Length: 440
Image (cartoon, rainbow, N blue to C red; front, side, top):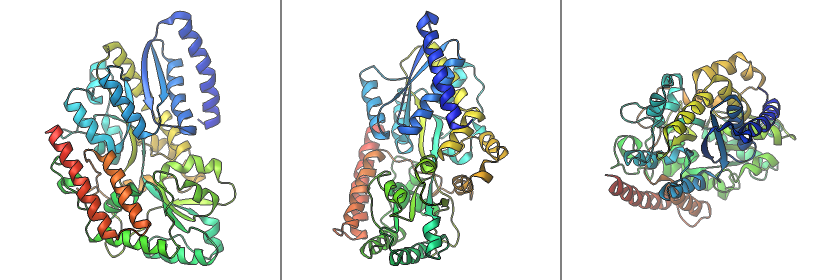
């Protein structure tokens, strides 16, 4: 369904559903807290609206509660006060924290939710690269994949063509291209967002180098960080030197540097595939594209695979069973190929089910919008290894802030790459030990 049609239909359905509910139909209410703002929030709210209009018994209330960190923090505080929502959207780095909450009885695992509601649910329908991130040691799915993405390299094709440059595929080529672009008057040739995710976590997976022991935290809470080793130090040192030369310009945490790319100040930008929908709307002055992340050829001739970002939907305990039946029905609705294909095609998030991917292929989406299958190709490039299947570290929301602080000290020239990564590992390990002590 086209996005404008979806919004129009959702608006009409909202009015109808609200009228029906107000008329006393007595629908069971479900609270859904999410972290999707702007256009993504409109689509997310639209899912709830469409579901509500088609259900005689359930009413899902979708509420934006701020960014990922704010949403997760609000849900935890609400749970402690006994005022938790039924569903909360949690980003991937909160997985270990939510799994620990599941062990303490705070979480209603999705596999059990669907089973208790008597709703057929085949988790093998989901893409392996997505599903493996959110399963327990018995391969049971704990939360529902919703918005999954991976970093790609966005590029300004118009600017590259004007400089006579091909799209870079290696880090050496990125540096060389940035130098030519700088000479051609480009203010900030290269940048990235979500620097821990793109330059540490995914850099490691892409080159099959672990960022921590114990299979990046999957195997044990006793994991320790190892990203102060030569592969990471050399990479961060390269970026620091590029910064001194004016080839790289740090634009802030999360997606703060997005504006640099949209304005044309930056030509090569590594960040989430999920920026596609916004770029289609906002970029009108040049032709843009996306390609796979560059390879550091001193580490590997070919990349391994990237890992996902984004979030899943977790169900919190403490509600009545009829309400959980509505949650299960809503999850079944969200998993349908029609919903997932529309979400993927209008946002850039990965189609999380095989059926949604096949529908997008059948729709001709990858022909009309070339490059939009880049994220899927990256995730499925090779069978994941222990170093490339993902990360599962406790307290990682706080640890990412530590990594941000230390990397920012490198970009400002206050620390060397080795000093900063040594400090990030030491500080991060302290937080890992606190998490282990609290959850062992």
